[in-house]
Length: 182
Image 1 (cartoon, rainbow, N blue to C red):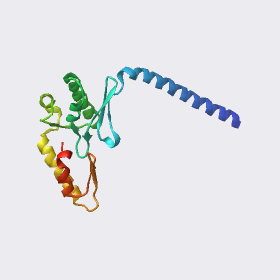
Image 2 (cartoon, one colour):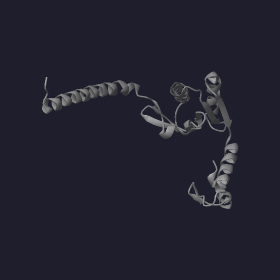
Image 3 (cartoon, rainbow, N blue to C red):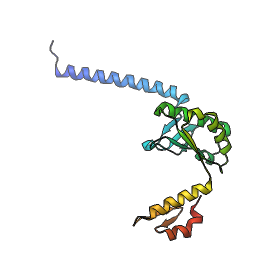
Image 4 (tube, rainbow, N blue to C red):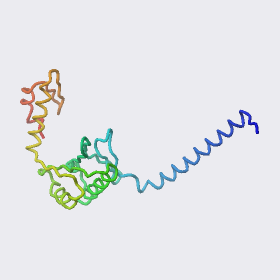
């Protein structure tokens, strides 16, 4: 059977049109299905950070992935979330990381922050599903932060802009340290 270029073009158009139509129907079905069950968790750019949707608001939880998945729970202290909501987020993040990365995460929290008792309780409860728990305090974080900045300033031409200060030397860092530290 011989086909004209118009019948082939029309057939191609019909196939493409049918595929688009099916995809649109599937998308609209998925949209309506996921309105209530929308993915609550996603990784940020380059796998850094976790974003969690709850009650129409998205919360960012700092996370890194080099060598292991580390999740910094203290970001949730900067919210007005209830203990129940924080518990839900913790459990879902734990399950999400295990499912998407097939490994146990490392959870990190500061004992000086208001939710530290909650994080301790949850980390103990789910310890078999967690690779490691890292606990710090504000004083130690400031020491580590300061040492990190000093190391960066060893390289000629380094400029650090932080909290409205432009720092190029250790002397400038020391001068503004009280305004910079956590």
